Image (spheres, rainbow, N blue to C red):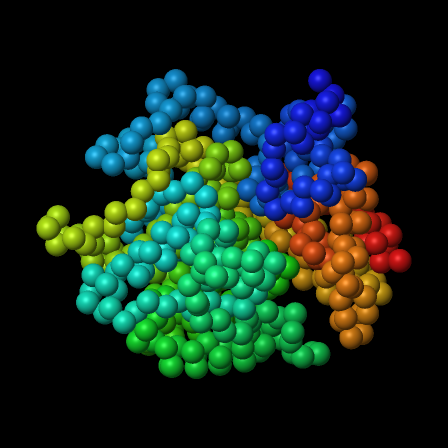
Length: 448
């Protein structure tokens, strides 16, 4: 088997995600034969360092022996079963573990397969909660400008990245969108904390005007990942929690991409010492092995649905593979690695190495900003450093960086002209130095 043969077979039958398929007339697909640690290998033996954790999911490397062993053990006993009317030990243990490490007050787990599905659960559950409580005017959601919560219709409705949303706008419900605390727009010399605090004024005004018709506020804590990896200060979350309590509005924390150590703490909300009413998790939950997501909610929300059948208050939502045993065992093995290897502490050193390696890029004439939150580092390429004028999007400068990196054996997937690193946590300091070197060379070439 070789790369070319597999590519030709693929293009006859597959439609790839988030892709203009015509690009592959000039941009060859790369068939991958195997993975090991932070490396992927194609059918011709070329290796690629997976600097984006295979779309932000792989935490502890490909073919991790501990996760492999857990899945193999589970496979000998139970691969899948219906979770309506039945249960199994892995899903119970996983729920106990998640509730034990999640922000205080979250008490029940509802499982799905991917992040969008978990977000849909939170939206429906929040709306349904208010209906069950007799507050029927509450039908709206507040979310941030430049936010992204997934591709399903509810998730798109509360998102604000036009590239993904605009085509489908006639199908969506209308959310209330408020200014993002995105610190890219702070004044010269202004701190992240000060700018995020100032930005909160618009959220406070929206809640004052719309609280009686609002179910929940939906946010991606600390990093708007698909929104060009824009970042903000934890103070915003603290102010938001206080305001949601004041106005009796739910807080939905979408930690699909930023949970499980990615921002420097197990969950991003910890950095503001707040607990949401709903916490959506996915991606790294299984270490990047199997599809699994979960929506955690508070006891009072659970109790609003707990009634006699004739009361018609049940949450009649389901997914065929809810709580899949294989996925749950992978997730349990992932949590074991966090416990056994003191991952959060180790990541602090890796984050420092990332910052040091990327720091010289801040002086590049086509880099407006190098920003970082934990194990996420982003480099914003622009046409003019002084004015921050972006390159015309049609020039696809980020794609040029992607092409160059692939040639060198590095997998990046820029968001527009934002180059970012979200590597697996098993990356070495030397590999960090190498990947930033290659990215720097790619930016040099793309900026000319």
